[in-house]
Amino acid sequence: MAKIITAKNVTKKEVITQHAAVLFRQKGFAGTSMRELAEKLGIEASSLYNHIGSKSEILQTICFAVANEYNSQLEKTESSSEKVAVVIENIIRFHIHMMLHRFDEVFVANHEWKQLQEPFLSNFLLQRKSYEAKLIALIKKGIQTKEFVNINPHVAVLTILSAVRGLEFWQRHKKNLEQKSLEQDIVYHLLNGLKK
Amino acid sequence: MAKIITAKNVTKKEVITQHAAVLFRQKGFAGTSMRELAEKLGIEASSLYNHIGSKSEILQTICFAVANEYNSQLEKTESSSEKVAVVIENIIRFHIHMMLHRFDEVFVANHEWKQLQEPFLSNFLLQRKSYEAKLIALIKKGIQTKEFVNINPHVAVLTILSAVRGLEFWQRHKKNLEQKSLEQDIVYHLLNGLKK
DNA sequence: CCTACCGATCGGTAGG
DNA sequence: CCTACCGATCGGTAGG
Image 1: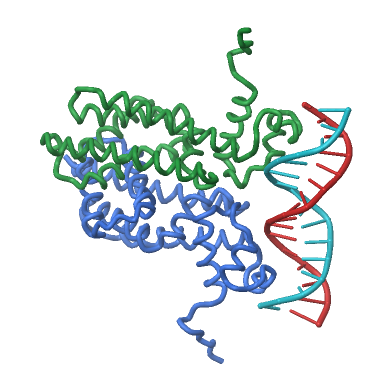
Image 2 (image 1 turned 180 degrees about the horizontal axis):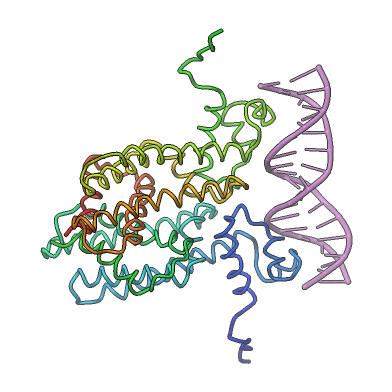
């Protein structure tokens, strides 16, 4: 028998997770109660447990959904034959895109992963480390091909990732800058600091 | 009568605040219990209240101590007659210094200020906004004096502040880089992206 | 600084 | 999906 397709193909569990992401961003994982989340959805707290296993499971869902998205995007660019500077630029643009369009989930994954329980905590950190190692390898390649100045690759990756994460501030300030020009300025500032 | 000077001139309240900063960084404000904090200090939870008024008060103390330090440093540089690029460089170096040497408090002020209660929340945000406005004005000045490229000053400040905050990652990774070379690489990457 | 304790709230379950 | 409820833990107070 075929699965029933709900409206817009969104399960109740996904709706819960989305609302949870907003609350976890605003008040933190520990600072958000299941009763608060239930109220947002117009149901009783106990009813949540028909769709999710635990509060902790919601956090896991959010964190690993985000991690998977970054990982699969990076895998795509790895098979590219473009110049390193172009690959790095694409990665920076992808990060900016995620920050702007998946703000709540990305924010939660960035800040609340610490509240994950084992073995999820270790798994998450492992994925993050491997992601950063791949970026560092890319920068190294760019230095070898003489595209980039001889900067410490670790520090370059740190600087780029952090600067892009700074869009969190931006969301908070709700400035009316055109997204495209914002993106261009950040990419310029970061790449210009790398290039010879 | 002269005030009694305790050993190292550190009050019990300051000791409590320091330990709280470490816990709040590791587990968040909401995720840390007063019983946990008391255990770290080897006393009962109720004994804490002889030195502090409330859990919330500890967070206020941490956040505003950090804010004051950044503000007074910025005021000092404002009276400087140096070139804008030098002033910006000094500010970047001060931020790096704070991140490395006052890590717990800075981290808590950066992440847990959201948990402040009114009117402290509004006051904190106001101070932050005014700090950023001063930095933006500085970048504008640098563009006028032709020291910097014609980048959007808001975006430049965002990129710089975020990149420096990224030292949070660095602390986590506990790399063995020399502090000075780390500092130099970040300053270079960020300033080179601004300069003509 | 401790013992003893408070009301409130937490995540979660039983049963329908 | 709800009502009713559980044990655990929370921030904090009284009194010494």
